[in-house]
Amino acid sequence: MAKQKKTPRPRAETPKGFRDYFGAEVTERAEMLDAIARVYRHYGFEALESSAIETVEALGKFLPDVDRPHDGVFAFQEEGEDGKTGEWLALRYDLTAPLARVYAQHRNDLPTPYRRYAMGPVWRNEKPGPGRYRQFYQCDADTVGAPSVAADAEICAMLAETLEAVGIPRGDYIIRVNNRKVLNGVLEAMGLAGDEDRSAAVMRTIDKFDKVGEAGVRQLLGEGRKDASGAFIEGVGLPPEKADPVVAFLTSKGTTAGETLANLRAAVGDSAVGAEGVDELERIAALLEAQGLGPGRAEIDPSVVRGLGYYTGPVFEAELTFEIFDDKGRKRQFGSVAGGGRYDDLVKRFTGQAVPATGISVGVDRLLAALREKGRVGGTARGPVVVTVMDRDRMADYQAMAAELRAAGIRAEVYLGNPKNFGNQMKYADKRGAPVAVIEGGEEKDRGVVQLKDLILGARLAETATLEEWKERPSQIEVPRAELAQRVRAMLDSQQ
Image 1: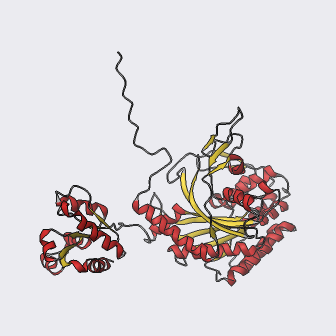
Image 2: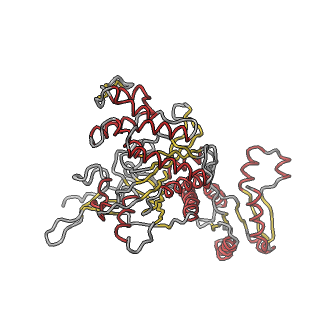
Image 3: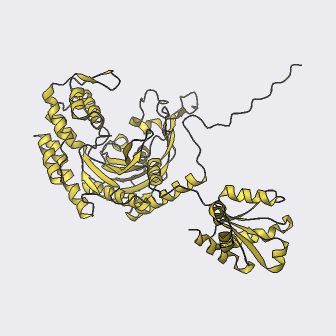
């Protein structure tokens, strides 16, 4: 009889492009999202949790290639019934496409305008890289059904308040605003209205302005240019004079909002849609000023061009302006942590009717990274108070202590490992980041007292204290059992 092969053990590893999040990271993210949600609710937005799985048809243009639904998203095909082909389903690619489906499906039951915020993971079947994962969090807020730019200005004001609420102070951020209609006016001034291919090529070139500068943009709009590696990048093929409106658009930012708007009017020439876009920016600037978002907090900035192919009107971006060091030790600004704008055609895919919408998406991981850079989160996470076990037969007493601490609002747990070795209990408390250990042996029980060991102070004294300091600031004290919660609270407060 042949020897039966053993089933191989599975490898204990995360799939490529995914990662695990542990205690402190999960807690920091949850606390930040709670702070953001409070601001959103303060502005009248309501929470929405939509399905993590959508039909590929509903995701629509968010797929890189609708003929290959597995590209760009994690998709699977349902098993069909009665010999029919099953439907393609996919994990949501972002939080905006589900909103369009939800609004189209429930619009008769929802108020108009509908103001919602949503937070949760999204999935993209893309090549992972450093800091780029296939699952990540998004945090969105959108207003559907409001055509006025007052909705866009409100989103910008809410975004500024959100950054401050999570710990980004004024002076460390700027809300930058532009308008897709202005770019459409520039394309009209170039004679490219209706030429979708070359218009798209121009927009891709505009998106490279911050990397290649004015000269590089002119080259890319013309015959092309060599990049840093020496490779030749083919240009759009426009004559030199056609680049002038683009350069005027990209360099139109002035020292004041009025100067910038005047420069943009010159850049769009006689284009009606371009003039409409500048008018909208002018109204947004006035509305932001009325809400306290003047220079230093928000500004009209034509260099905000990312995503212009998707948006239909105003676009905005939150940029953090403080400096950090990159992997090579060079100083650079932290950069964008949120972006959004007006997208009036998304719901139309479902209803056949244009529905105005505007919104913002916060990059959760990037914002958390920014807060760590500012020292607002991170460091050593404080764990629970650990009630040690000196006598396993008195487990009820120790559980009662932990319950008493929890009732007083103190995070606490009882050591549930093998209590035989007290040293192992202290090692466990250290690994948990416990600030205090509670100790009650038989002698303490008889005398009605407990020992409180300040693990934070103890670690500090072990590193630097002299013998005299050890005596003056003992890290372990004896307190009446009846005062357990009160004295633990006092010890925790002293550690702040």
